Image 1 (cartoon, rainbow, N blue to C red):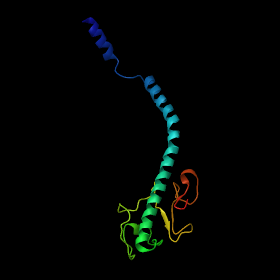
Image 2 (image 1 turned 90 degrees about the vertical axis):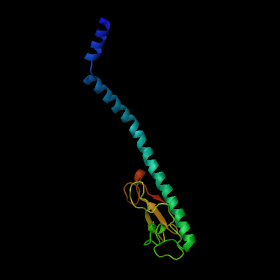
Image 3 (image 1 turned 30 degrees about the vertical axis):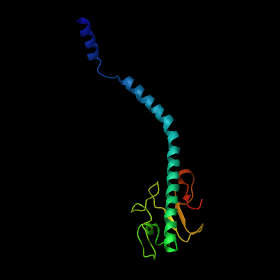
Image 4 (image 1 turned 120 degrees about the vertical axis):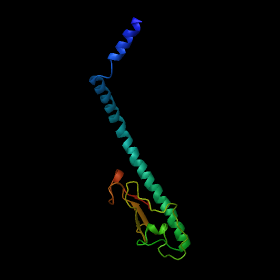
Length: 146
């Protein structure tokens, strides 16, 4: 019985971690985060770039379907909104997108649509993270003509 009370008293007296133990754990977690997080950020950027390319491809398919029905692409003024709502184009049999909103690019900015385009029948682009033409890495433009 005495052994039981002694063991219970030792467990009861030790109620938590010391400050030194907590600091060691925080330091280890910080070091691990410092090693792992920088390797994940490029993958996030590549994922956003791939998502923008996929959305531009889907817009292209929808624009091609609209052109097959109407004989033309929507003008710059009619824009991508003509894929979900008829702006008065004869032969329009849409909507040409499943959702009733035009999605924004992965950086939460509007896609840039111009028709007639300088690189083809139409130009469709996302200007990347900075929202400005040109740039490198995450600020790089993702376009329908490349």
